[in-house]
Length: 509
Image 1 (cartoon, rainbow, N blue to C red):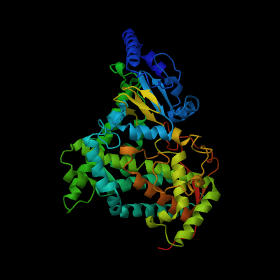
Image 2 (cartoon, one colour; image 1 turned 90 degrees about the horizontal axis):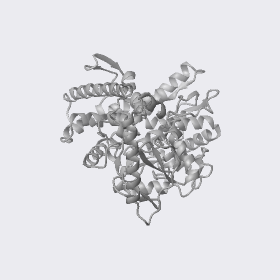
Image 3 (tube, rainbow, N blue to C red; image 1 turned 90 degrees about the vertical axis):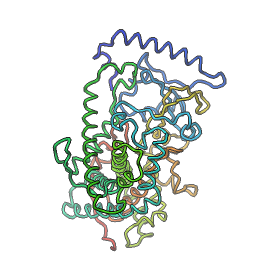
Image 4 (tube, rainbow, N blue to C red; image 1 turned 120 degrees about the vertical axis):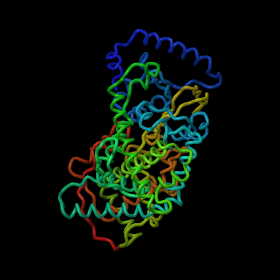
C-alpha cells in the first residue's frame, strides 16, 4: 500500500492537487464551525500533508500500530487516512460506548471498494447498515441457523463434523505416524461442508458452473467462495483514501476483484439452482435456502444468494482461526494441555465429550476465551460511519468521521489485562468469570450488532478443542513455536500449524 508510488504512477494531475487543497480548506472551516465549545477535540497522531498517517500504516497490520499509538495518545485518538478522519478506539469502555450508547449516530457501515463489490452493496447481515434489510435478514438467520432453537435442530451436523474430524486425524496418525498434520486444511473443509449442509441441504462434492463452463470440485469451490474473497476483502485500493479521485482508473485492482466476484457469484448461482432441484422432490423445509425461498418474499435473487454465501464464508473461516490458535497454544504448552486433558477425563471419563458437558469444563472455556483475547479472529471491527455529530470518551466526534474499533488494542490494554501479550487461560478461571460473557474480550462485537454466529462459534470451537485434546497429544514440529505471523489485518495464521499427533486410548462409542 505505497500511496506515494501510486500517486506518482498516475502523474498526480494538477487538477487533483487543486481539488485536494480546496477540500482541506473546506474541512478546516467546517471543523472550526461545527466543534462545540464544551468538548475538547480528539488527540491527533501527527502525520504528513495530504496523505496523513498512511505511510505509517504500510506494514498492513494496522491493529498493532493502533495499539502502539494508544500508549502515547490514549484509548481514543484521531488519525488521517488520506482525506478521511479516522477515530480509533482502543479500550473496552470507549468501544462499548460506541457500540451501545452512541449506536444511533454511528451505526452505518463504511466499506472499501473491494468489500463493496464482494458483498453486493451490503447484501449481508454482518456488513449491512442497521436498517430494515438488516433486521429482517438477521431474524431469518437466527430463526433457521444461529438462534438457540435452530442450533438444537442443527446439532446433528455439528456432531458429524467433530466425528469426521476425529476419524480423519486417527487415520492420518495411524498411516503416517511421524508425518506432521495440517489441521487447518482438514478442519476448514469440514466446516465448509457443515455450512453447505445448513444452507443448501447437502455437502456438495462438485458442481457444474454453467457461466464458467466448467465443473468445480469441492476444493475449488472452497477457494473461490472462502479463501479468495477473504484475501480480496482486505485488499487496498488507494482511491479508498482519496474518494474525490475515484474518477482515476485503477484497472489492475478492479479487474482482480471483479474476476473474483464473478467466480463467486457464478458458483453460488449454480449451487442454489442445484439445491432447488433437489428440494423440489422433498417435502418441508430442509435447509436455509428453503426457508429464504418460503419466507423471504421481499428478497431479490442476488440477496438470497448473498445470504447463503455469508453463512458459508463465515462458518468456514472465523471458527477455524480460533480453533487453530487454541490448538497451537496447547501444543506449545504441554503442561496446560495436560491440565485440560485431566479436566475432560474427570468430567467425561471414557465417554466422548459432548455439548452437554461444555458447561462443566471451566478450563476449556478459559482456553477458548483467552485464545479469543490474544488472537481475536477479527482484530478490527468493520469500519462504521458517523452520520451525526456525537461524542466518545469525553471528546467531540464530528459527522463524516469513520470509527475503527480496535479489538486487538482493547485486549492488549495493560490497564485491564496483566501481561496482556502472554497467553494465560488462568486469568479466566477466577470466580467473577461468567461463561456466557461474550463482551469480555469483545471478540463478537457488542450492542445491536453483536455477532449472530457467536453461539455456534463458541460451541463448535470448544467441542473441537476438547475432543481433539481428549483423543490426541499435540506437539508442534520443530521451529513452529515462534511462527506467529498473521495474514495482513486478519488474525489468520500466515503459515498453517503443523503438528505431530500421538493418539491417546480410544474412547467409548
